[in-house]
Length: 404
Ligand SMILES: *Cc1c(COP(=O)(O)O)cnc(C)c1O
Image 1 (cartoon, rainbow, N blue to C red):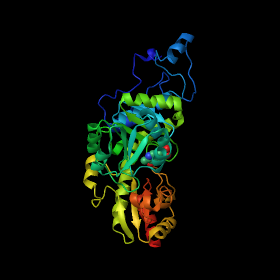
Image 2: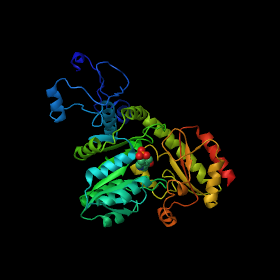
Image 3: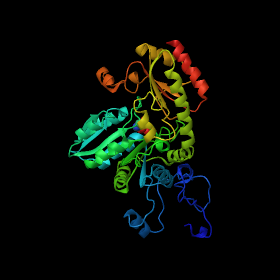
């Protein structure tokens, strides 16, 4: 198809280039039209040159597109760019972050397998394993995120994978990913990291020793709160299973969303630097204020795992700052209701700053005892810092403080 272009070059040579260059250019394969920006392929199926060509492609004897539930060129560009940024052999896109996590379990686990999950992961991840995968005979147990000895002790001969988020939501706890990967590998199991909060711009779990990375692309990868999507990245042997799940279970990523994410990735590093700088400034300011009892942010020297965060992350400590206010739930609600600029919504990784009360929203379905065990106090507020002027954000949080 591209023979007529052989005399010149359409694609960039990315040999040896750095992260920021990959984020802008990896995964793009120009068509003979010579488009500069990434093309968007809106098509359900693909034509074959002959009946024999159709048969060969269906049989997998020759590579090529068949149907967009299986493959789509725009989705593939997104997958290749994520693989390049995470340092993975391959990546597979999904319709949402939860579809990506579902595929990890469906693709790698069977009835009778055992899975260990950090106590502090996204609420829907807990529901997915606890309510659904348990019904299919997968054993599920929980371990405190930072407790390396606890992880080691909980691994059984049938443990298929360990699943963590670091830093955690909303309390910004960390686990030493390199140490946990060593524990997992010594016992013949896999480490899966949900890297949604950090993105590869701040942390590359595969380079730290993890086996599989999952993302909700809905968050920072989109970056402007528009589209749902997810992605899994890792070694080809595991990604083969992810491909199998997506093409049969069918939670395929829309090419339109993949195109938005490609555009999002082009500015990922710039945006993450800005999110982190504002989050750091607000965390430091909040820590000085009367009315604030505690600030949870890994970029603060007062954070118990600040040294680990400096080792494991680069360029910043993420865009999410959580803090406890005086006055319990009433104080927290008064604080939230007194803001005038920041959006009261649970999304994160958006250019617009958001504020929530985890105890009655994301963690509202937990019992009071479960919330206590997870460290989600009634006085806790989570702010996902966006890209507005940091002075304006501080002024809005000051309105909340004044309402305490
Ligand atoms: C949002 C989120 C998910 C789920 O992603 P969706 O795209 O909403 O399905 C998974 N993990 C983390 C850490 C998240 O923040």
